[in-house]
Length: 239
Image 1 (tube, rainbow, N blue to C red):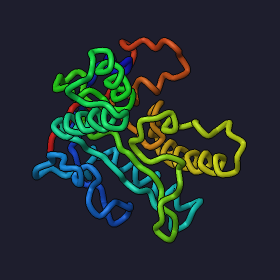
Image 2 (tube, rainbow, N blue to C red; image 1 turned 90 degrees about the horizontal axis):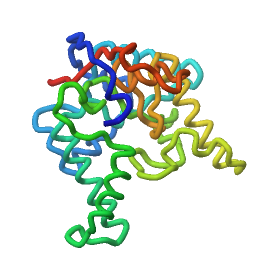
Image 3 (cartoon, rainbow, N blue to C red; image 1 turned 180 degrees about the vertical axis):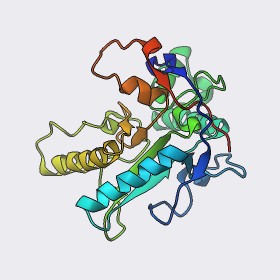
């Protein structure tokens, strides 16, 4: 169990609503659908009603400083079945990337790879007390596109399993290119936090509002927050 999953949930019953895709940038076909993730008749481009409202605020803040730039929504609502598919897919990708064979993995190798996976991917838990953030409709993965529609270079792709995914990875690197990556990430963070989103500790692209992770991060000034003093608004959501 991750620390934020100790936070109690007081489900407010707020509905999932569609993200207005005419305002935000998206890929032509959702990245996980390209990989075969089992969405069925469910759409990945949904969030809780108040979360969509705050995403619109962030877009307005972005255009105030960078006219014609847009937030690109990479991923939003994620059914448990999709979470399971992507966790398994990522495990298999890491096995292949390390030149290993799935059938020949030792227990120690399996444990090491699962630790890498779960550093970035939440466990696809059906327990309503510990839902994956994206399955609550309160988490969104985003990046930026410029006025020409080109992706803004953040220094690493979304979902990369490496330290480059940490939000401040490039902060102390003096090279001009690295500093530009950091500035781009800072701009994304600034526009999202201006709308009260909070950023995942390990992922420059992941922001949430109202879920367990958000409630836990809200007490970030306290190194040992009391989970009983916090409450998340959103638990698992279903379309």
